[in-house]
Image 1: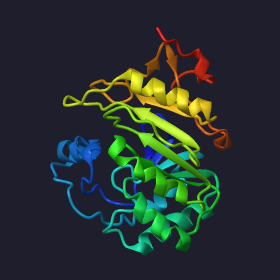
Image 2: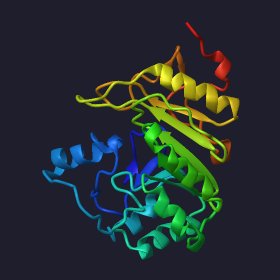
Image 3: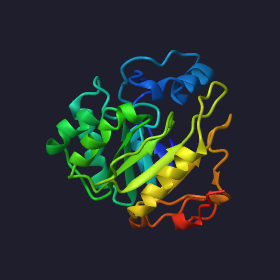
Length: 249
């Protein structure tokens, strides 16, 4: 809980334990499983549990965006609906925080959306790692109750050409770690151009590097754009504002 090295958020908050199941190719080298083995000597595969101590941690978070369940998935199929309600309701009681919920189970989120509270400081996002998972964006854009919808193309495993209708923010990144898979910055450039053509803020989280958050430049520019409604600027360099700054050479 608290400050995080993830460049596109201010803090992380984990009401669930470090547990999850891998559901698609993007999960193959998930940092959570590696950290659980390294720091706790545990196999983190399994259903998450609620961390009751997490609720007191909320009051110690600094104002700004908060990545919820960075070590699990809020909408994991084994997470009771009551837990999800509790997280959504917590956002309404803490308007100084912007809750960012990122999931690979966006179809479950869409099914529950009509029954959940959607305060104006709660954003929903999904991960798309390849063309085979662009369908997740259809479920994401269907969640009209959310204050904002974002997509994380990380780890991006191949070039994609998404339909960005209804999308309010884009994150792009290659895979990190010793077993990282092939990544081309041309894939990121294409998405940057597409995002800016639709006036969508673009955050380039990383290229292909051993450590996360490295190799952040696209043609000498560090793209750290976040939605203007957050009133928060990432502390990792200048924010580029125009896709026209990208060079073809």
